[in-house]
Amino acid sequence: MTSEEKRENLFSEALGGLVRVGTVTHRRMEERRVRVWFEDDQMSSGWLPVIISQDVTPDHEYDDPQWTEFETEDRVPQTGETRYVPHKHKIIRKPYMPKVGDEVLTVYLPVFNADGFVIGGIKRWR
Image (tube, rainbow, N blue to C red):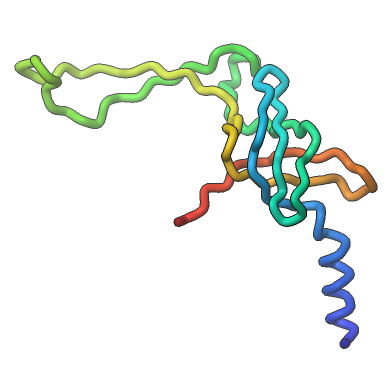
């Protein structure tokens, strides 16, 4: 084995358990935590916090409702209407929270028995 291959093996061993892909099995919405099943070693995680990944309007606190508006792209009359009426829809933006069954990417701190975090969801092309 060459010295470069040895370095690659050491790097893989050191980082092998730090970044992992798993499936959400349980979630606690009020705490923003989930449990993740790792198929490769048939183990479940402890309760992992989900990283907050929401753009926040500067004039509001994080926990305030974050309203946004969007215009309807479909500019044809709606059912029962004789002409198109311009209008907007209000939606509330919320931080990402994976659902049970979602595939997620997790990161663990590089120490024994370390805490981990869910940094986002994965949508694989099928």
